[in-house]
Image 1 (cartoon, rainbow, N blue to C red):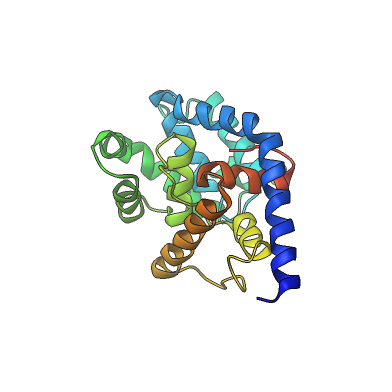
Image 2 (cartoon, one colour; image 1 turned 45 degrees about the horizontal axis):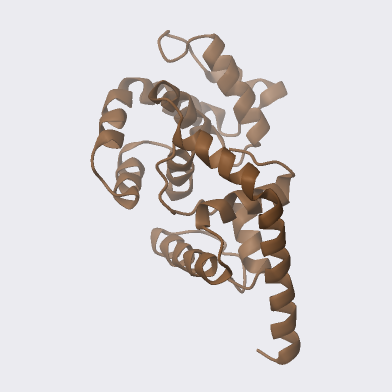
Length: 216
């Protein structure tokens, strides 16, 4: 890296540190809300994370609120019409509806897995293997939203774009295999260490830069 590139990188990193300092209290408050989420809310957080792939967070959130009002967790309700509704359309609504119905039956087992003395990585592996519709990104998202993330990375398009912007990645991956996901996650963790911002805080900082909000 030549001097000009080094100076550009230094300026970018310093700007990121400054932005983090400005938003740190709000970010830490949000992370505290995740950590203190009652177990009774876990079902709908999982439902939310099942719906977000290739779908806007706003649409997923509206559907979750509708499912809450209908007591979907307890009642025999077909969720597909809600997911299909143009006002809050969820892509792949048929498949995701089946996954939502499936987790109702499986949820006691999922709660048991969360309660075990596993590391965050072990819990994530179990979720990916056992919960239909969860990949590594979605499982990590769910764990972050219930305060069980432990520094694992949610490698969605917002995060990947910023990792490229700050020189962690040379290019955006076309797909994310398990091996590739873990390799990028390690590089993200190293960048977090180098820049002096905890990974979970950096994750929400990147989200706020992309969306203007400190979202879940």
